[in-house]
Length: 289
Image (tube, rainbow, N blue to C red; front, side, top):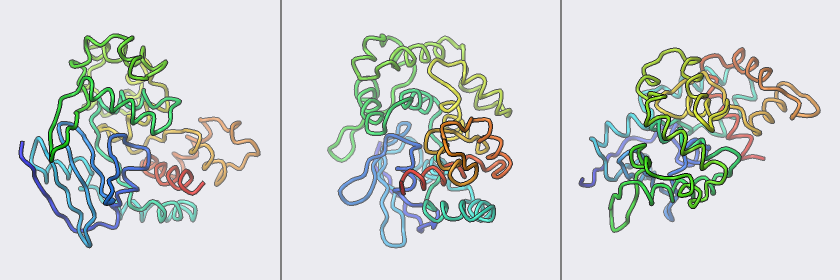
């Protein structure tokens, strides 16, 4: 594969830090010049701001324009979404102004499942390290500009990996869960193509919850951040619980606020854009803490 390049006009709703540091992805890394390099699918790409333009370059399996448009969700009107959400209340408007460059990526479903199983009770540097080691050990090598990168391994590439081998990569208690989920998919207990084609979000969520290591929060992250793209889901972690309590619920002890209360509030306030609202609120609360 040869290098491809694409240059587009800068968008108000496209900021590198907002996209790559908001907690939705783990294989993009900042470079000395402020650009980011990431591996997704069978692609290695560098994204860089240059004046009034955004420059994309790298090794792509398909045409780079098609790849960028799909992965970065460029056909969705984020200006309109921000306008709708900003009119809900001042808190949301403030959080959008803070993270206005967030776009929710269309990430590979399989990679998103395993990545968020690994993310459970984990921190981002450690998650990124585990995923990188997993890819180096079992993924496919791609060489670009004197550097070697590795794709995220497919279920087939992991079929002979034992729990012990996963443990050696630093997965901790997640080793068994990644092993079992891999084999559930290889054995056809969960069909990823069927999940993509299923329109009913609750049915998809129920199937995801059958996978070892996938609880409600992980399931919702998979639904929101993968090619499933269910924008109505509202993943709840410690930061989301905190911001929803601080802004709206206002209990003395945020840990006493249950998920049902938060979900009901999110659905009534944000509707079918709850997932995007969650990202603005989460990112704002975490980054400005």
